[in-house]
Image 1 (cartoon, one colour):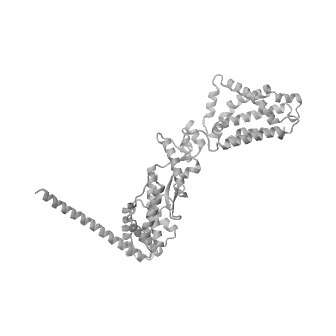
Image 2: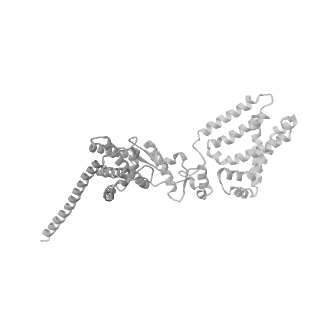
Length: 452
């Protein structure tokens, strides 16, 4: 009997638990039924075993256990009546959160002939399965259990392990795009971004707020996101990071989204991702230009090389997708980085001096700071300048330079550079205004001549 009980445990594990562990789609659906049937069948078999004497049963009573039409049909019929009426509903509610399934099962079983059909089906199944299961579970008289029954169960277990291992990624049947594996959620809202620490274009996860790997992961994440966007495009459906909840939501209870908001995956649109990527690109390029200028003596030539290298790398990774960059967009980057350097140098100086700065100087500094900020925002409005402006951790120019331990130029050098840029900007402004005035005068003269 000890051998028989071990056989029962191994049989239950093989036929019921193993499919669950390996996510077989059909077995995932019938798992609550299998568990219910196993509970009832095991209980009835145990009671029958005890009633016939247990380990001390004689030959006559032992024949009862071996007779299919008595033991097999009787236990099968009991399972067919007890399990669907009393266990299917509660166990499904417990395992899958299917609220109301108990009431539904009661209504279903109350239909005419439903219980009778279930009992007859159980009896037939028990009659057919009893000869197949009795000897593997209880063994053969006169033979060691492990030679026959144990070998049969091991072969069955190995075969099922092989079958279900091959279906490891298959779960409860749900519409494409309605479920995203929790391990893939970080890839869905990801963008391509230049990493100034590694000097490479990598995948940046907005959900985790950090770099998570090579650019190929972003491409995979967008493929997954496109499938989910297609799923939600024509309705107000939501996407989950839990397969069971997604199954319940799509096939049983749409209110599951109200009960499990923490498992809903919010997927940003392609336009929104493009805007975020664009903003971070301008910010990262500005940081890269400042850091490269801090390292090299030939600042101007090097900064242009850095910008072109980043643009080419990002465009190569973005090929065929939205987000292609143009080098002309970064034409005034050198002047902007000069303004950023002075702005952050002033901020460091104010933090170092704190209250020792005279009031008049503070007013002058505030006026210069406002001029610098307006200069930067006018040319690159999407650039994230300060840590306080960050939407995602460490995305700003200030945070990145701080993490890179950027020392910055001397205050006098920064002022001299900005003075040069400011004078060049003033000359450019007056030149443009002069061109407008001259063009207006020439047009007026030309108009007068044409009307003569």
